[in-house]
Length: 175
Image (tube, rainbow, N blue to C red; front, side, top):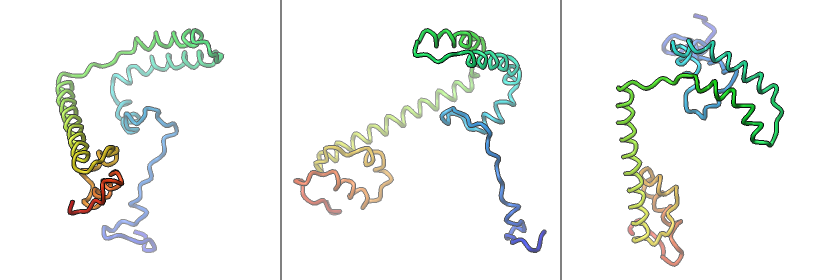
């Protein structure tokens, strides 16, 4: 241990506890569908992925060659013609089917998500109806409907006040 460095109660210096992760040289453009860790570490470790790497390299070279030779145009037919060899090759790449266990687990999760979504929608509709009937709120707004369960009492009342017509009178906590 370096006596000149500050130490924590664990005995490690602050410099030893800091971990700096390297930035990826090329970002993934997958709309956050998969994590970078999955794309950079897990997926390349799969045997199927490694088996197809050489075939994928050949497709990539063909695509780069096609792209380099392509002259941009507004003509749809030219674009389709330029991309068709890639499309044909891409159809040959296999997609692994899910196992029965994964399929069953996914179906259960999807059913639960549908149920949660349906219940949430029904709750928001009941809230909108209640606000309209009791407080003359015509348009409760997205914020109020989506956050009503987490709003504190005063915040909820304030949101309802904002949405009431001026002719409805003043809303208080007692109301």
